[in-house]
Image 1 (cartoon, rainbow, N blue to C red):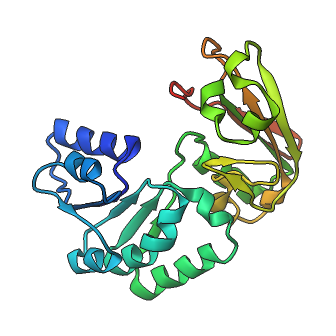
Image 2 (cartoon, one colour):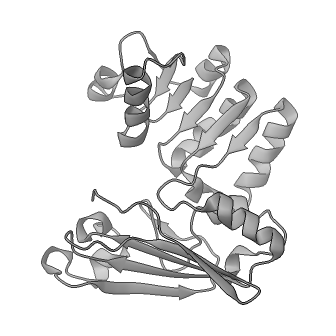
Length: 243
Protein backbone atom coordinates (compact mmCIF):
# COMPACT_ATOMS: atom_id res chain seq x y z
CA UNK A 1 0.00 0.00 0.00
CA UNK A 2 1.08 3.57 -0.68
CA UNK A 3 -0.40 6.72 0.83
CA UNK A 4 -0.79 10.07 -0.91
CA UNK A 5 -0.91 12.49 1.98
CA UNK A 6 0.10 11.89 5.58
CA UNK A 7 -2.27 14.16 7.45
CA UNK A 8 -4.93 13.29 10.00
CA UNK A 9 -6.79 10.76 7.82
CA UNK A 10 -4.00 8.68 6.34
CA UNK A 11 -1.87 8.85 9.48
CA UNK A 12 -4.82 7.48 11.44
CA UNK A 13 -5.30 4.67 8.90
CA UNK A 14 -1.60 3.86 9.13
CA UNK A 15 -1.76 3.81 12.92
CA UNK A 16 -4.75 1.46 12.85
CA UNK A 17 -2.95 -0.92 10.49
CA UNK A 18 0.08 -0.96 12.80
CA UNK A 19 -1.98 -1.37 15.97
CA UNK A 20 -3.91 -4.29 14.50
CA UNK A 21 -0.73 -5.85 13.14
CA UNK A 22 -2.26 -6.01 9.72
CA UNK A 23 -0.62 -8.06 6.99
CA UNK A 24 -0.76 -4.95 4.79
CA UNK A 25 2.64 -3.34 4.24
CA UNK A 26 2.84 0.42 3.82
CA UNK A 27 5.70 0.80 1.34
CA UNK A 28 5.66 4.52 0.56
CA UNK A 29 4.11 7.85 1.52
CA UNK A 30 3.88 11.04 -0.51
CA UNK A 31 3.55 14.13 1.63
CA UNK A 32 4.96 17.64 1.95
CA UNK A 33 8.68 17.79 1.35
CA UNK A 34 9.59 19.45 4.64
CA UNK A 35 11.80 18.20 7.48
CA UNK A 36 8.78 17.96 9.77
CA UNK A 37 6.71 15.98 7.24
CA UNK A 38 9.57 13.62 6.45
CA UNK A 39 10.18 13.05 10.16
CA UNK A 40 6.56 12.01 10.64
CA UNK A 41 6.85 9.11 8.19
CA UNK A 42 7.23 5.76 9.97
CA UNK A 43 10.64 4.12 9.90
CA UNK A 44 11.21 1.82 6.95
CA UNK A 45 8.59 3.55 4.79
CA UNK A 46 9.85 5.27 1.65
CA UNK A 47 9.20 8.96 1.03
CA UNK A 48 7.70 9.55 -2.42
CA UNK A 49 8.82 12.72 -4.13
CA UNK A 50 7.50 12.07 -7.63
CA UNK A 51 4.77 10.12 -9.47
CA UNK A 52 7.51 8.28 -11.37
CA UNK A 53 8.74 6.74 -8.10
CA UNK A 54 5.20 5.57 -7.40
CA UNK A 55 5.05 3.82 -10.77
CA UNK A 56 8.34 2.06 -10.00
CA UNK A 57 6.95 0.70 -6.72
CA UNK A 58 3.71 -0.60 -8.26
CA UNK A 59 1.79 -0.96 -4.96
CA UNK A 60 -1.35 -3.07 -4.71
CA UNK A 61 -3.43 -0.05 -3.73
CA UNK A 62 -2.95 3.70 -3.39
CA UNK A 63 -4.91 5.67 -0.78
CA UNK A 64 -5.25 9.44 -1.30
CA UNK A 65 -6.24 11.96 1.37
CA UNK A 66 -4.16 15.00 0.48
CA UNK A 67 -6.52 17.52 -1.09
CA UNK A 68 -7.76 18.04 -4.61
CA UNK A 69 -4.44 19.37 -5.94
CA UNK A 70 -2.89 15.99 -5.18
CA UNK A 71 -5.27 14.31 -7.63
CA UNK A 72 -3.83 16.27 -10.55
CA UNK A 73 -0.31 15.27 -9.62
CA UNK A 74 -0.67 11.67 -8.46
CA UNK A 75 -3.87 10.04 -9.73
CA UNK A 76 -2.80 9.10 -13.25
CA UNK A 77 0.44 7.56 -12.00
CA UNK A 78 -1.41 5.71 -9.25
CA UNK A 79 -3.96 4.24 -11.65
CA UNK A 80 -1.19 3.23 -14.05
CA UNK A 81 0.87 1.60 -11.29
CA UNK A 82 -1.75 0.05 -9.02
CA UNK A 83 -4.86 -2.13 -9.45
CA UNK A 84 -6.89 0.38 -7.42
CA UNK A 85 -6.82 3.90 -6.00
CA UNK A 86 -9.00 5.20 -3.19
CA UNK A 87 -9.68 8.91 -3.74
CA UNK A 88 -10.91 10.81 -0.69
CA UNK A 89 -10.58 14.31 -2.18
CA UNK A 90 -13.59 13.86 -4.41
CA UNK A 91 -14.15 17.61 -4.72
CA UNK A 92 -11.54 17.37 -7.49
CA UNK A 93 -14.17 15.68 -9.64
CA UNK A 94 -16.07 18.95 -9.91
CA UNK A 95 -13.62 19.50 -12.75
CA UNK A 96 -15.76 18.03 -15.52
CA UNK A 97 -12.72 16.93 -17.52
CA UNK A 98 -10.90 15.17 -14.69
CA UNK A 99 -13.10 12.16 -14.04
CA UNK A 100 -13.34 11.05 -17.71
CA UNK A 101 -9.58 11.43 -17.99
CA UNK A 102 -8.91 9.25 -14.95
CA UNK A 103 -11.52 6.70 -16.03
CA UNK A 104 -9.71 6.42 -19.36
CA UNK A 105 -6.40 5.80 -17.56
CA UNK A 106 -8.04 3.21 -15.30
CA UNK A 107 -9.57 1.39 -18.26
CA UNK A 108 -6.25 1.39 -20.11
CA UNK A 109 -4.41 -0.17 -17.19
CA UNK A 110 -7.23 -2.31 -15.80
CA UNK A 111 -7.31 -0.40 -12.50
CA UNK A 112 -10.21 0.89 -10.40
CA UNK A 113 -11.18 4.23 -8.88
CA UNK A 114 -12.74 3.73 -5.44
CA UNK A 115 -14.77 6.56 -3.86
CA UNK A 116 -15.16 6.41 -0.06
CA UNK A 117 -18.18 8.00 1.57
CA UNK A 118 -15.95 9.98 3.94
CA UNK A 119 -17.62 12.33 6.40
CA UNK A 120 -20.95 12.41 4.55
CA UNK A 121 -21.77 8.74 4.10
CA UNK A 122 -24.76 7.14 2.41
CA UNK A 123 -23.04 7.05 -0.96
CA UNK A 124 -23.90 3.39 -1.52
CA UNK A 125 -27.49 3.87 -0.39
CA UNK A 126 -27.89 6.97 -2.54
CA UNK A 127 -26.38 5.22 -5.56
CA UNK A 128 -28.76 2.28 -5.08
CA UNK A 129 -31.74 4.59 -4.73
CA UNK A 130 -30.74 6.35 -7.94
CA UNK A 131 -31.37 3.17 -9.90
CA UNK A 132 -35.07 3.58 -9.11
CA UNK A 133 -34.98 7.27 -9.97
CA UNK A 134 -34.42 10.24 -7.66
CA UNK A 135 -36.60 13.31 -7.74
CA UNK A 136 -34.46 15.42 -5.42
CA UNK A 137 -31.48 15.23 -3.08
CA UNK A 138 -30.98 17.51 -0.08
CA UNK A 139 -27.51 17.91 1.43
CA UNK A 140 -26.73 19.81 4.63
CA UNK A 141 -23.22 20.41 6.00
CA UNK A 142 -22.95 21.29 9.70
CA UNK A 143 -19.62 22.37 11.19
CA UNK A 144 -18.49 24.31 14.26
CA UNK A 145 -17.47 27.94 13.66
CA UNK A 146 -13.72 27.19 13.70
CA UNK A 147 -14.11 24.71 10.85
CA UNK A 148 -15.45 27.43 8.55
CA UNK A 149 -12.48 29.73 9.08
CA UNK A 150 -11.02 30.93 5.78
CA UNK A 151 -14.19 30.20 3.81
CA UNK A 152 -17.19 32.26 2.71
CA UNK A 153 -18.65 31.95 6.23
CA UNK A 154 -15.66 33.87 7.55
CA UNK A 155 -16.61 36.75 5.27
CA UNK A 156 -20.30 36.72 6.16
CA UNK A 157 -20.20 36.00 9.89
CA UNK A 158 -18.18 36.89 12.97
CA UNK A 159 -17.18 33.31 13.67
CA UNK A 160 -15.23 34.16 16.81
CA UNK A 161 -18.31 35.46 18.64
CA UNK A 162 -21.00 33.27 17.10
CA UNK A 163 -23.21 31.61 19.74
CA UNK A 164 -26.25 30.48 17.76
CA UNK A 165 -26.89 28.05 14.93
CA UNK A 166 -26.68 29.99 11.67
CA UNK A 167 -27.45 28.95 8.10
CA UNK A 168 -25.15 31.07 5.95
CA UNK A 169 -25.68 29.37 2.60
CA UNK A 170 -28.67 27.99 0.73
CA UNK A 171 -27.94 26.90 -2.81
CA UNK A 172 -30.82 25.23 -4.66
CA UNK A 173 -30.10 22.91 -7.55
CA UNK A 174 -26.73 24.19 -8.61
CA UNK A 175 -23.77 22.61 -10.30
CA UNK A 176 -20.77 24.83 -11.22
CA UNK A 177 -17.80 23.96 -8.97
CA UNK A 178 -16.52 26.87 -6.94
CA UNK A 179 -14.49 25.93 -3.85
CA UNK A 180 -12.64 27.94 -1.24
CA UNK A 181 -10.04 25.83 0.55
CA UNK A 182 -11.61 22.42 1.20
CA UNK A 183 -15.11 23.74 1.66
CA UNK A 184 -17.62 24.05 -1.18
CA UNK A 185 -19.03 27.52 -1.57
CA UNK A 186 -22.04 29.21 -3.21
CA UNK A 187 -22.05 27.43 -6.55
CA UNK A 188 -20.97 23.92 -5.80
CA UNK A 189 -21.84 20.26 -5.81
CA UNK A 190 -20.88 18.04 -2.86
CA UNK A 191 -18.24 15.33 -3.19
CA UNK A 192 -20.46 12.28 -2.82
CA UNK A 193 -22.64 12.69 -5.97
CA UNK A 194 -19.64 11.81 -8.11
CA UNK A 195 -20.22 8.08 -7.79
CA UNK A 196 -23.98 8.23 -7.61
CA UNK A 197 -24.32 10.58 -10.57
CA UNK A 198 -23.22 7.79 -12.89
CA UNK A 199 -26.36 5.89 -11.99
CA UNK A 200 -29.50 6.23 -14.08
CA UNK A 201 -32.27 8.41 -12.78
CA UNK A 202 -30.34 11.17 -11.07
CA UNK A 203 -28.50 14.30 -12.11
CA UNK A 204 -26.38 16.02 -9.47
CA UNK A 205 -27.79 19.43 -10.28
CA UNK A 206 -31.08 18.23 -8.75
CA UNK A 207 -29.42 18.71 -5.37
CA UNK A 208 -30.34 21.34 -2.82
CA UNK A 209 -27.52 22.41 -0.48
CA UNK A 210 -27.23 24.27 2.78
CA UNK A 211 -24.22 25.10 4.94
CA UNK A 212 -24.66 25.62 8.67
CA UNK A 213 -22.39 26.73 11.48
CA UNK A 214 -23.29 25.50 14.95
CA UNK A 215 -21.65 25.92 18.33
CA UNK A 216 -19.28 23.26 19.61
CA UNK A 217 -21.87 22.12 22.15
CA UNK A 218 -24.43 21.46 19.44
CA UNK A 219 -25.27 17.82 18.79
CA UNK A 220 -26.56 18.55 15.30
CA UNK A 221 -25.00 16.59 12.47
CA UNK A 222 -24.99 17.08 8.74
CA UNK A 223 -27.42 15.04 6.68
CA UNK A 224 -28.29 13.71 3.27
CA UNK A 225 -31.87 13.11 2.21
CA UNK A 226 -33.37 11.97 -1.07
CA UNK A 227 -36.85 11.71 -2.48
CA UNK A 228 -37.86 8.92 -4.83
CA UNK A 229 -41.43 8.27 -5.96
CA UNK A 230 -42.74 10.65 -3.25
CA UNK A 231 -40.91 8.78 -0.46
CA UNK A 232 -38.15 10.60 1.46
CA UNK A 233 -35.18 8.87 3.09
CA UNK A 234 -32.78 10.72 5.43
CA UNK A 235 -29.29 9.71 6.46
CA UNK A 236 -27.31 11.35 9.26
CA UNK A 237 -23.60 10.48 9.39
CA UNK A 238 -21.18 10.62 12.31
CA UNK A 239 -20.96 14.10 13.78
CA UNK A 240 -17.97 16.35 13.28
CA UNK A 241 -15.86 16.39 16.43
CA UNK A 242 -12.99 18.51 15.19
CA UNK A 243 -12.72 21.96 13.71
